[in-house]
Structures are given as structure tokens and as C-alpha cells.
Amino acid sequence: MGTVRRIIDEGFGPWALSKDGTDLVRRDDQPLGEWPRQSGCWPRDQRIPVRPAKPFRVAVVGESVARGFLLDPVVTLPDLCRAAFREAGLDDRLELVDFTVNGLSAAGAAKLCRAATELRCAMIVLYVGNNFPRSTPWLDDPEARQDAARIFAGRGYEDYLTARREAMSAFARDFCREVEETCRAAEVPLVVVVPATNQLDWHAPWVVPTWLSEDRLAEWTATGRRLDEPAGGTQAPDLARQLALAEQMTILDGGTTARPMEIAGRSLVLLGREAEGVGLLSRAVSVGADPANYERRCPTEVAEQLRLLGRAPGCRVVDVPARARERYGVAALGREIFLDYCHHTLDSLRDIAADITAEVCAGLGLAPTPGWPERLVRAVSPPAREMASGYLLSALHNQHWGQSADTVEHWLRRAVETDPTCVEDLATYFSMSLPEAQFWLLGDSLAARSERMYWFLKNFSHLPVLDAGFAERALRVLPEDGRQRLAKELEALWQKLRVERRGEVNLLDTFWRERDSGPKPFTVVAGESGPVSRYGFITSGEHPLHLDVVLTAGPGLPEGRFDLQLNGLHCRTGRVTAEWQHERVVLPSAMLRAGANELTYTWTTAARDTDVATAAVATLGTGPENLHLVRLARLRLTP
Image 1 (cartoon, rainbow, N blue to C red):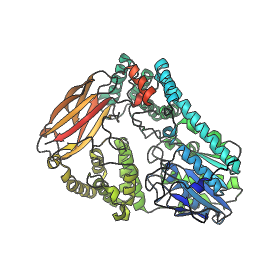
Image 2: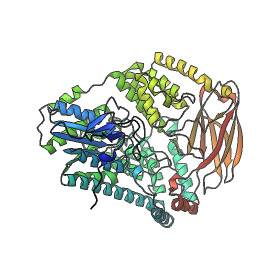
Image 3: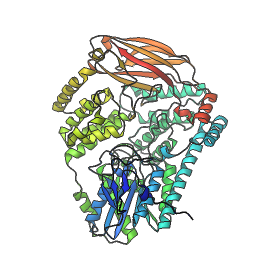
């Protein structure tokens, strides 16, 4: 009978077992294999003893929400739990092993739970679920692709999405069963933390339902345009009007795209119909499919499986959505407790740490000293400078994911109010984003105050971006002295990026789009305001520029129209067809401005050939929502 090799014998993540077998030792040259590769995303512990040093060892296994993304390393959930143990008078009895990591997959979390049992942990805290939509092997298997293609071709996209949700639920159920069996075999109790998600202040992208009939899609598109238009020529939102139009779009697409449901749900909440609105917002998260793997929030299907695991024998549960609603009301669904789509503020993380600590004490039969939750609030108070950096990173993250000006400026404002000197970090961001910066080579030479910006950019592959929108929002929020300083920094930084100076700029290589991944040629995705692509560039504004475009319609789409805007002004209307074609456009100097400029393409929507979409599902595992609207081979600016 064979023996099962221990996880700690093999090593995992950045750690390998020492030669004498007494410690897991961090090694920079340790191959990470299937584990997340991003630098700086693992705990910084250099050594983990195999034998516990205190009576009870607790492991926290979690993804970036537990890592404290955007606040890490100043604030992490494991460190808050350690502080709670101290304030509860249990520091001499409890020790914590930090197994939290950005980008952790479900398979990785299951292995870390096994490692925790091998390290003789008395309890495991499991905090995962937001990464499951990406972890689910929905169309990886050829047989699953064929089944999905048959469902789409025979019953339509709505049933295809239902099958996807069922697959996600089954995936989560299998994961929970594996973790439960691991903990039961080792007789280690488990605390399951159910993730909460930002539903009020996080916007899913517009997904164009090209699977609808021509007439139905035309009506859906026209309704969407009306939704974008201010009512009566004013900027104030008319909630009743928004609700009616969004509900109409949801009826037309059968609830297969998230954004109209979100708009309707938010409108209902603001109109006082909270239960209806929250239900619709939850449904929107579960739709999940989008053109850029954008959805990273724990859907209802996964959350329910985690709750069931938390109710199993030997398990306990911290239901963050339920407890947050008790504390904050409907504000628990928005930026009151979230920095972005799922990552928490300091106050909210502190609440979660307190809830986890209470469950750990109850599960292990430990009696904390009275008043420890109140002492925990006073015990954890990071410097204003560090918190301002966290808020600035939140603004950046929201910006790169295409969130609203209101949300981005909220976190910029919080950063400035917390510490006005954070304008230095803004300048650092733009300098690191220059094509020549090669910031990934600068880690050892950066000042400490710039280190978090460095890791943020490096972890998420922010290739050089010309973020005209973020610069504009930052300048609008900063006080006068900060505004002048940043404007001066930008003027100096951007001199070398002018089209006139570079001679040629390929916008497909260094362009700004509302995502946090690098640019991909031939890809145009839906953005904040419908099927739109945004690109930034720098110019003196004194001379006209020439724009060369080579493009074709996405697979299975007929010819259509595109509208080009420069800095918000209409510049050109053209045609996009099934054949590759070349467009040469003159950008007049009267429409250019000195500094950052924004080029926006809006694409006409059209129904896609069903056979083409079905073939993409069956052969490539590409869902109908992931097929290109337009493909670009060239987007080049010259003087």
C-alpha cells in the first residue's frame, strides 16, 4: 500500500522544507509551479516551524481578500487576527500561520489546508470564493465544450448561462467536500468565512448580447443609448426613469447581461425598495460572464456551498455578508466597507478579524478577556501616510477596472484628506508608467514610500499606460498646491512621450483601456459606456496628427459603423466590415490639446451568426460573450 507524500515535503509557494525537516524556509529561487507567481503576493515570513511553539496553532488559508490587498503589508487579516489574540489575552496560547496569497486558486487552497494539517494546526480558517469564477474549469474539457455548444445552439444563451452556474456550483461543492474530508481525517476543526462583495459601487462592464435576434438587439441597443442620456438635459439621475429603462433591457436580453440588472438594482435600493434591489444585484453577480474575465466577486452559487460547509459537523461559519448588513445596513454593499470589488477597508477587515477570533475561541474552548474587541480598535491604527497610500492604490485599481469617476475620485479624495503628501505617490505612478521606465527592474533602488506602488504595478502587469482619465480626475480632486505640483510633474514626464517627439506611437502597444491587464492586439472589449475602446496619447496640440487604422468586424458579425471621438468631440464616422480595411484619419490641431488626449471608438452592435458562436464554444472553449466585436491590427499615430 503506497504512502501519501506530504505537501510540506514537496514544498509549496515560496517555502521548502529545511534539510533537517524542522522548518519551512523561504527561498527566493524556489520554483512556484502551479502557485501564484506574482512577486510580493505571499506572506513575507522567512521561516515556519513544523512543530507549533504554543498550545494551539491556527492557519488562515485565503485569497487576496484575506491578504488585505491594497492595504498589504501595512494591514493584513492574519496580522489583525494576531492583534486580536493579543488583546484577548491569548497570545501565549495561540499562534497563527499565514497562508494567504493573492490569486489563490481553489486547488491551491485545498493543498494549503492539507499543509496546515501537516503542520499540526488545531484549527483552520478558510477565506476563499472570489476567485472561483476564474478557477472553474467550465470549458477546459473538450466534452464540456461540446455539451455547452449543444445547449447554446439548441436552447439559447440563457440556458447556456444556467449550465455555467450549475458547473460553478458543482465545482464549489467538490472543493468543499475535499476540504471537509481533509479536516475530518486530521480531526482539525474549520472556520469557513463567506466572502461579501461590493454590489452598490462596483460596475460590471457592458456586455453586448450579440446572441439576440437582430430586431431585439437593435431595441436593446437603442434603450441603452437612452439610458446613457441625462433626463431632460440635466445631470441629476432620474431613478424611476433609469429603473424603467434598465428593466426593459433586462426583459429584452432575458437577464443574460449584468449591467442593466445592476442599474435596476441600484435604482431600487435608492428608491427604498431595498429587498428587491439587493436580490437583483446578487443575480447580476451570478451572471458573471463578460468579455475580459472581469468578474471577480463571489457569486451566490459559491457562497451557498461555503455556507453549507460551515454548517457541517466540526465546522463553524463567519458569514461576512450577513454580519456586515447587521453592522452597516445597506451600506455594507458598497464602498463603506469595500476598497474595490471585494477587498475590504481597515474597519471592515478589523470586524472580520474580530468575528474570526470569536469563532476560534469558541471552537477551541478558550475564554478571551472581556473588552477585547474594543481594545482591538485602538490597538490597530496604521500611520496616516500608509493609509493614504492604500486609498491611492484603491483609486488606481478602480480606475484601471473602468469604474465611475465618482468612485475613483472618492478614493483620491480620501487619500488626500488622510495625507496631502500622497501627491508624491501620484507622481511616482505616472513616472513608473512611462514606456522607458522598466519599473520591474527598479525594486531594490526605490524609496520605501514607493515600494507599495512598485509591487502594485508589478503584481498586476500594468504595462505602460497613458492614463489621461486618471490624470484628469486626480487634478480635479487635489487641492491647489497639490494640483500645481502634479501638473508640473506631468508636464515634465510627458514631454518625452509626445507623438511629435517619438515620431510614431502604436496605440495597441501603449494604450489606456479600462482593464488591469496588458494590451492584446485584435481585442476590443465593452467598456463603461457600451461597446467602446479608449486610447490615450500625448501631444503638443500644435499640429495635426495622422491616425492609421487597420480593422475588421469580429467573427460572425456583419458590417457595421464606428464613431471616432477625440477628447469627447466627434471626429469621424466609418464602416467596419468582414474584410480587413485601412482607414487614415487626420486629427485636426483644433481638437487636440497640449498634454494627454483621449481617443474613443464606439462600435455598432449587431447580431452574431449563431453557427460561428457555437463553433467557438465547441472548438476553442470561447463563450459567446468573449468573442470580439471588432479586431484591430493597427492603430498608429504619426505627426
